[in-house]
Amino acid sequence: MTRERDPFRIPQAGVEVAPLAGLAALDLGIGGSLAPGRFVSESTLGGMVVYGVYQALLCGLRSEALVRRGELRRRDQAALVARSVGRSVQRGAATGLVLSLVLLIFPWLSLPMALAGMVGAGKASVDLFHAFWDGLDQSQKEELHEAAYRAGVNLGRLVHGARTALPEPE
Image (cartoon, rainbow, N blue to C red; front, side, top):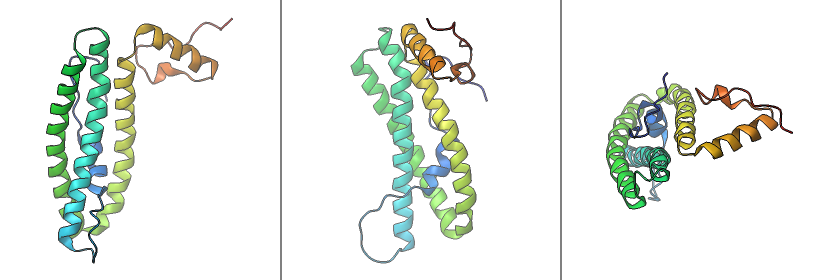
């Protein structure tokens, strides 16, 4: 798995959040039994929310580096995030709909999907950390490296290409 370092390329939510999107459901607050139509609609909306929130975080954090360097204005960043989230929500609706229908027919697949969701959440967390890291300037990165070193944590393994050890603090 390679890390995308191009700050001009905004990553898209992908298969890493698909299992979570398939398992997520928004309670519509409609009383009554769990009818198949209600299950499908709640799962589809849940998938849209999962994809939308993840994409908003990913795009916002990644584009922050461009804003800090003066290559993108805040207004343009907001428009970029909105367009990116719009496309991602469509993908989330399709994914949530398909996976809810699959779970409706094969409910026993929810356990393997939950396990795949945990793996996907781990990858999504690393992607979000990298997007956050790319938005920091050099002095902030140095500060975090020093604080992590004092805490006994090696950020070099998480951030490829970074220093693995800092000099002993005075």
